[in-house]
Length: 85
Image (cartoon, rainbow, N blue to C red):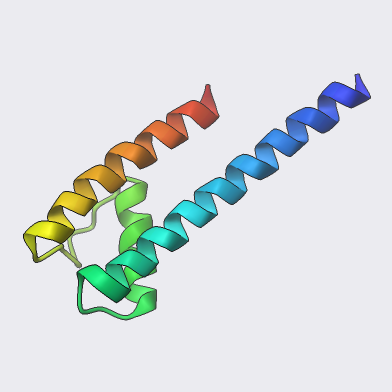
């Protein structure tokens, strides 16, 4: 029905918005507090890490950023899995 279709569309939009916010926050954290990199590099690293591509061209250097990366990936995979199910 139209009501269910509208609800489903809202869920998709909110899920995509949540992913974007998660990645932007991750990029901000990487670039502002964890690593000496630009915001664009932080966003790039967050996207590459979040999608589990891992090109290896940018790597976390401190123990704190490595620990954050582990948590970031695990939460990101959980978010993506919950959206797809």
